Length: 201
Image (cartoon, rainbow, N blue to C red; front, side, top):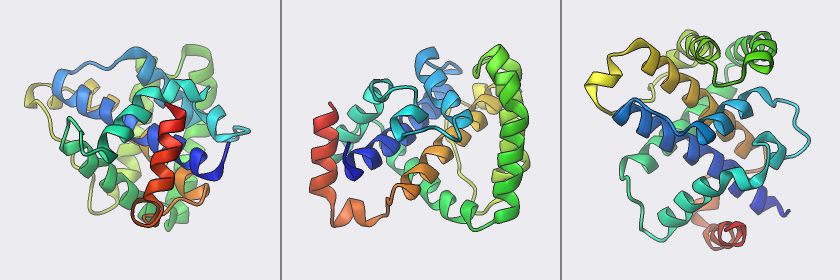
């Protein structure tokens, strides 16, 4: 897998997680398989490859399709690119705060055994991941603002789930940077990025 294909994988992980954030905020429900891919990636800190972070590259096909639609100016959700940009900007602030990155790393490490035993999408794990996000990342400014149905956004368990998936999106953003990703990918290396996405599809 080429370097650009690996970066495309991380970006697919990012937008796939954020599409779930949008879905949960609008409907109060997530797609179980996609939710599982996102949350399990949070706990695969020492995965041997970018594909292994998500279990398998095929698990990111919905995210690859979202990226493909975006680059073809055929995106269905105009709020999704803005949300992705907000998380990519959040990643910059997050990695520049060593104390916060360590707190998040420790929190995930503590939760990993419970996630392994109960499953990453278990309500208790979701709740704890949401609390971890609220106690750490949500204090960075400007905050990532999620729009949706006020009925669902007023429910504590839904908000916790959204925060947990935002943590997964941030994990993908960090991975993208670690793989050499930058905003130049969208400007100067766009054709190469699109080719990598189309090859994955």
